[in-house]
Length: 233
Image (cartoon, rainbow, N blue to C red; front, side, top):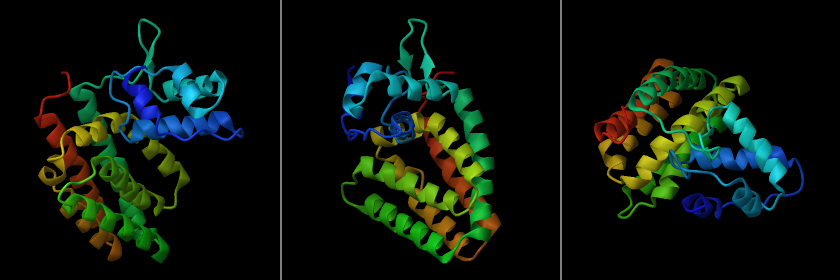
């Protein structure tokens, strides 16, 4: 089980209600947060033990994640996180820029005062972590996700949010695992400046500014990852 057991050990046991749905949500969060790495195998039995359920809800959740192409079955029948090539990552980045940029533009037009307050709180928390002398990278990853999804929720489109979550299921193991391994990306990608620009645009209801800010944020992280040559061709 190895490192997947370590990642799963942070998850609290589930209640006995809607077990398949909740197992899916927990495993999806591990992928989105980069706690499972590309190529890493997932033990169904180990996941079931950590989540405190039988293997059936986990099998159901894993089947859904395979259908989402967030997990795959290797030739030896092991379930693992797909290994993404550089070209696949570039393609995913292009799609994320279009869809998440659209969501940010919608959020600028439709956000409520409560939405803006949540986004501003997430931006401030992320900025504080990035500016700390020794940033907690795991927390920075979580705060980055919170900031982005607070924006996308402000678009008030459940369908759009579902599409974005599906994209993050694929991107998370690469972008967030890389951030954990490379603290310098917090500074190199200019994440603080980019997030601040997005917040200003949302405050001003500047849809095009919000779209451009999210695009720059996604592209900055992508360019850093690709420049390191860590993805296969």
